[in-house]
Length: 177
Image 1 (cartoon, rainbow, N blue to C red):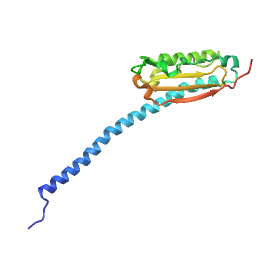
Image 2 (image 1 turned 135 degrees about the vertical axis):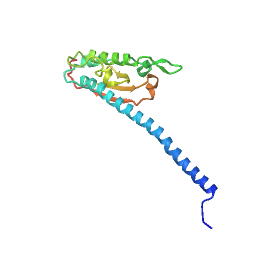
Image 3 (image 1 turned 45 degrees about the vertical axis):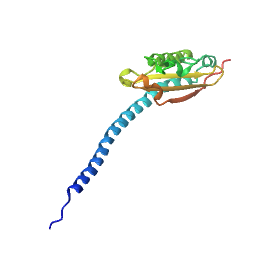
Image 4 (image 1 turned 180 degrees about the horizontal axis):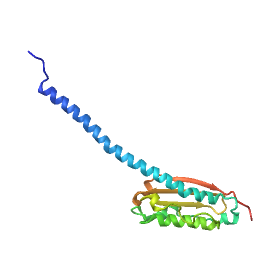
């Protein structure tokens, strides 16, 4: 009499293999999602660097006068990130956060009266892809520190779930008062 596998043993082996294969297949979807998210995070970080770099350079320029530095106001306004919310009840983000970010950037650079710095966010849409930027600049009039925070996402409704990039710029200019 030859020894062989019974039908029950074969079915159990197939079931164990099927569970293993299904587990491996489910990891592909997870890996794809994580890879896409990591690409967006890297793009967002480089976008933040491209926007915040010139801004910090302008704010820390040694030829900035204290009187001009003191005039830097909160941008887009006192409510900070609240300006990006269209409806407080639903938490819906404004339809075009980029326009607020551009205005905050231009307002801050413009208040310094420096030549040679870009007056608009220095990243073209072709380089940024579909990312929507959001920029908040906070400054107390008598403080020597300007706080800058930035976010960029693919879909504006996910703006507040995006990583927040933050830096501070300290006054390094000329005292004129």
